[in-house]
Length: 222
Ligand code: DC
Image (cartoon, rainbow, N blue to C red; front, side):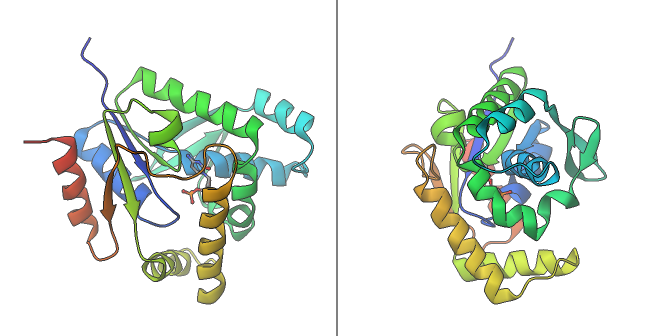
């Protein structure tokens, strides 16, 4: 059997990871996993079940029961939580404002890291998140770290929100991105950090296709 290809893409919120990871996966005809969506799915379930973040036993029981898998919905990827396919639900302001706190819980990280590592053992994959190159796939074939100016990232998210009819002022959204990055970079377990062997790409002033090409240059060195 040929060796599996694993591509890790990390970076702060709205730096373009998911859009690019999905396109690179399509070009290479391999799987794609949006690990942020998995943290969002657990957050969505905690909210739905009225669980408190300090109720570790109840959270563990929920994690023991939950089945997560990626499914195709049109040309987008959606997540199946047990038998329910979710996508928009994971992007609500409520989920977004709580997800960093949920992602800092060790029980949650243990479960999701394990699931993500299992996915990468079964198939070639592009995986995007915050700790893929550092913790989930430290031996990934290729590692990329995206960065982008905060105002450019806030503009991107603002446009996405408008298109999806999610209401939040530009200023609130920009601050939420800054706060979430700070929280993700300073948590105790698996903080957002560039792996020492990751290649950094500043996506601020590049088009989607230009970033895809930069990634493909790294993935297919000539
Ligand atoms: O990429 P995103 O905005 O959908 O991610 C949501 C949150 O999930 C992000 O603020 C931090 C957390 N996350 C994480 O801790 N580790 C990952 N591998 C992916 C996301």
